[in-house]
Length: 184
Image (cartoon, rainbow, N blue to C red):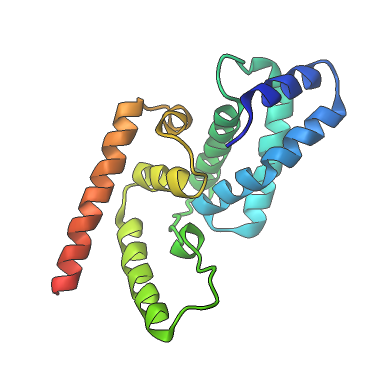
């Protein structure tokens, strides 16, 4: 997703006082962080505020970043923690909006396809909203940010095998869920 070598160079330049390099980091990650935060809390203004807080934290804590790891994982972990703080503070319960997971992009969809899409979307949305918080995060990272299992494991501070297990279990249970809903 992001170039780790380029990130490492920018981080080093920021630590040496380069404002332009920090602006480059912000430009590079701002939309990813904003989308990630919005996927968790579903509030546009709060997402923008939290995104700003993430970059303030990044700037203030950059000297603690361990360059043996990916910068993208580090910044997403900060974003995740800021979201958790926000959710705890305001007791917000997030719901995954399937519209953001897989939007329709083609304008040449037949009415039948559109109806089928909407029905499928409702089923997926119902299923995702029943998932545990961690499973929602795994699905969000995998589909919205298109992250690897390794990256997700670092962000969620879980083993890669635990992330994979949960991901495949969610997928398998979804197949069962769909099969049951098609019968009923």
